[in-house]
View: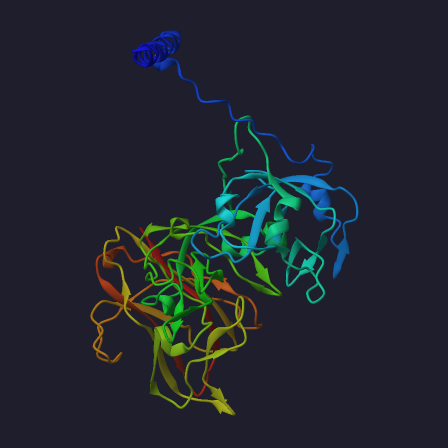
Length: 437
């Protein structure tokens, strides 16, 4: 009986204790304990720009003192297109310097996502120009700038607190007018955006990367802007988007600028960086094979259109009816079909350079090509041609030539060269472009 009383007394005590506790705390008053975020490194001692400026023109230097600076991450290996590197710039927008750090670990995006505010203490690292880009990395017996061992990354790189957690900024890419402007060492390892970009004609129908025996391989894909400037985007064989087909349109391309030795290689973080919603334009700088985009048809004469190492810039396509003496020629350079479907307006432009006396180069358009220029109904187009036949390298722009009468059709552009026994000019043609909306 005494044991039962003791048991009831114990239960009653526990019940009253529970009531007492719950009566002191309303259910909506529970609070999450505050998260204390503390910066690992003290305040910066140097700007990134000043730190980067210490890099020698060749080779590297060893950083033997505390040199602490801030940066903002612009790269991401989440989609597999960056391999054991982190690219960062000194400000979320309008940066003045970019750097790359080599780290021997993957999934860096988990700790340092895009926009992460990071702080680096470079003491014990090397700084130098490595294969075209300024980098920092570890002392290595084989490589000038080695990858920091994964276990040691936190010794040199840490996130910066915003009060309760990692400070993550919204990045604003530097907007540049052309791909040519982007090919400047001051933009290396910074985030930029270029409008009116598309993949080169030869890339259409391909995937972002090539596959060999089922395995993805690192692949360059050519891109060109509406001004005719070209470069490549470099896609890793491990990129998760590698099997996606190249888009056909044009639009804004956001990328991290990079260079491998003397070759420019732009890197996208994921497919959101490729915002191609506009109509594709036609551009020909004659960098490939003539047959890629053109049919060269010789009606009369032995001389033919051919690509040579001249141009604005080189190469360009050339037709010359002189061979020992002036020869009789009629030669057509006819584009493959150019789609103007969905366009509300379109214009053609190109550049010419002429030398020696002879007939003026003619330009035409048709939407009913028969396969034979002599039986096709051509519409002549009025264009400004180089008027100076006394010297080479007097490149002249044609001006914008309206193709509005041919929108929503598939057209061919043709250049007709003729020469006689009394005059055989040399005509050079470059940067043929059809753009529209």
